[in-house]
Image 1 (tube, one colour):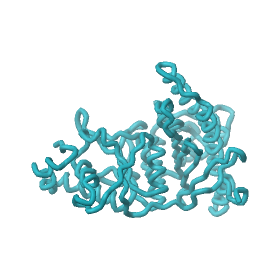
Image 2 (image 1 turned 90 degrees about the horizontal axis):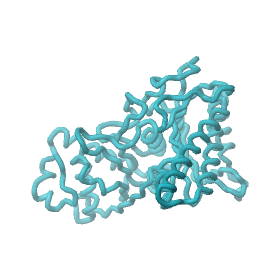
Image 3 (image 1 turned 45 degrees about the horizontal axis):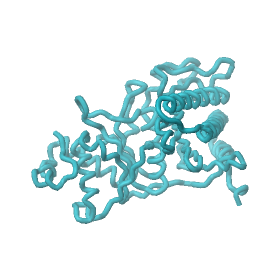
Length: 352
């Protein structure tokens, strides 16, 4: 029965009891994140799509309200020393009059809010870092840490149902909001990603901008059983980062947001701290892999708050293949794959 399932609050408390030396600060913070996501879910559900400039204005307003909802709700936890989101140029301290805590929070309050007018699923992303000891006013440098230093990470998905999926370093679990109860119940315990897959999620509209190793990989997948992979791949793409990664966690697959060649060296498209690192931690905790193409994503040390990165994550065997293709390209060992014969068969002509 529904009432016999563990709630998110109960789950967090049980995890605290399993951790020797736990103070309850992380428990309080995760519970406040749960509350913030529930409030934003209501805001998204109440929002009415508009048209033209007026619609864009209300979407931006909703994003601003979601941002302030996170900031105010998390300040009440007493567990936060500072926080930063994608609209902030510098970290902010908590709201005065609330206690300062031992954690830093990086969050994106409403991912993809500009697509709300066409009713695409949106979500929130969060990442928790430990604050330096005795720091009451954290600086930018305190947030510039690799993804391996995350204490916890997760997202909320606002779709037909509202879910929170998160990890605190001991696996990945998903919780669904039952609106009649007003509670999140455990519905997706111990999520794991199979090491192999036949599903690919990538935005082929930008294929002309990809580096050759990514073009090679996607071409081979799309050639199906007649191509070098010998199997048919399904192509899945939705313009929502949270929904795309959620599909990988539930059904397996590989999700690719590659570097793009626009006006100079290849540039990543996702913000490392706000988007890539939290998703990479979740996928790694579920048994998958996350890479930039040239190394583990979680080991990248950011140099700025808004640094961008490519993100290749999901089924471990496919991510390893992508890394191998990047390595062969960098070492000049892949010339045979970009011969005139291959180019004639390719859907996406490679760029050098």
